[in-house]
Amino acid sequence: MRIIVCENYESLSKKAAQIVGSQMILEPKSVLGLATGGTPIGMYKNLIKMYEEGLIDFSKIKTFNLDEYYKLPIDNDQSYHYFMDENLFNYININRENIYIPNGMSDDIEVECVSYDQLIDNNGGIDIQVLGIGNNAHIGFNEPTINFKKGTHVVTLDESTRQANARFFNSLDEVPTKAITMGTGSIFKSKKILLLASGQNKAEAIYNTVYGKITPEVPSSILQLHKDVIIIVDKEAASRLNENDYELMKEYTKIK
Image 1 (cartoon, rainbow, N blue to C red):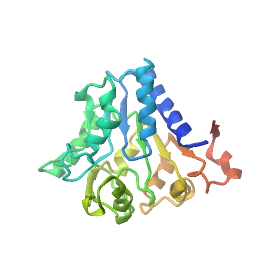
Image 2: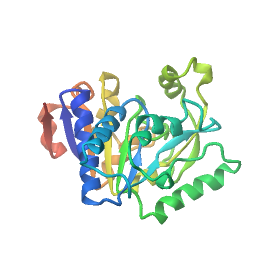
Image 3: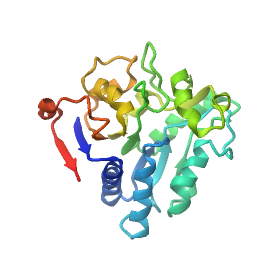
Image 4: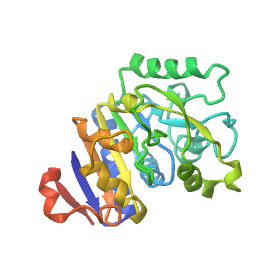
């Protein structure tokens, strides 16, 4: 597990974009696993800038998103289909046929879940999976629970997650209670994982991700077992990490 501690959110976003962009340059047909939420927006802005400068090309890239709200129409401005268009896809040269996002409106959600995992496998698996992390250490929408879920599935959202996401809606009542999400097993199959976290409110989750017991009650703790994980945090999110232990994390890099 490699830990990169950045000075602030801006440098975190730039470093994340550099890593994703490097993957695209090395393998122009890469399969990217993408995340939504506030944290990756800065990374997406930097990727758009890199594209506009001719540094990266999305024409042969395929993307798979982590999750989508259940029974929220894709044209709703809070759907993750809409989010991805507004924050990335509308500004790059990606082939729309190469964009995959779980269909939370499916009439047969169980078939949708199985089909989504099969689509990932059929495309060779995810080369680099971008993750955010919830205050309760959820990744994707895998909430704290009694066991790790292997595949894509429907989950009932934790009340703390709904409250955290309520800032994007007019009221808490409008926040969906369920979502369709890649399971921790689906995420774990990714060849490389890039976890982003910013702010003091993520410090405990990051601490538990790095040092905590591996348990489904802390979903992100499973990342301790993955062979290639990079965690990029700003100084606030890293505030509970002990500087004397940085060598135990393999690497400490300060990006100015």
